[in-house]
Amino acid sequence: SEEVHSILLGKRNVLFGIDILRKIANHPDLLQEAAWNADILDKARLLPAEKSGKLAQLMSILQEWRREGRKVLLFCQTRQMLDLVESFVKLHFYNEFTTLRMDGMTAVQHRSTMVDRFNADPTIFIFFLTTRVGGLGVNLTGADRVVIVDPDWNPSTDQQARERSWRLGQDKPVLIYRLIAEGTVEEK
Image 1 (spheres, rainbow, N blue to C red):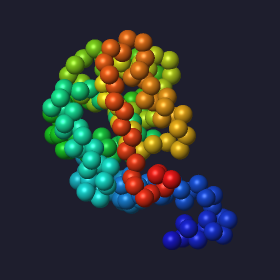
Image 2 (image 1 turned 90 degrees about the vertical axis):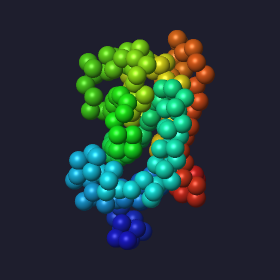
Image 3 (image 1 turned 120 degrees about the horizontal axis):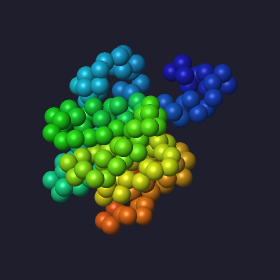
């Protein structure tokens, strides 16, 4: 590709290439810009889950957790991937439950209200978050399942994200899942 050629010539940073490989591991169609001009539910229709082992597995896990009455923190590294995952979940489950979302675009003054709402409201099934969203007061002890869909290159970022459910006040066992595509740059 032109991108690989420019990296080999030293015109682009090698991290640019690694980012492309990471996107392919999450869902190969993330590289198709045309699909990203659609609204969020159209993205899910345009980019089938079957092309991504992670998304197919995630839908299966979420169905089981929903039956079990679990509360889930779902982390993605980027807003683009969080958009895609959120759209797949809403399309797959037909908006049959309440969700919340917090990312870098969420106003700081609304964050503590969202956290309190998630922790107190048993009808909220999933809280969608980016791994880097944080700050004081993001203690999500209402969750008993955490899934990191696309792990960060920096393990401490993922660790900080997953520990949001292990704060003081947590009275349930919490299981953590990291989705890593076998044989990809993520695994390495």
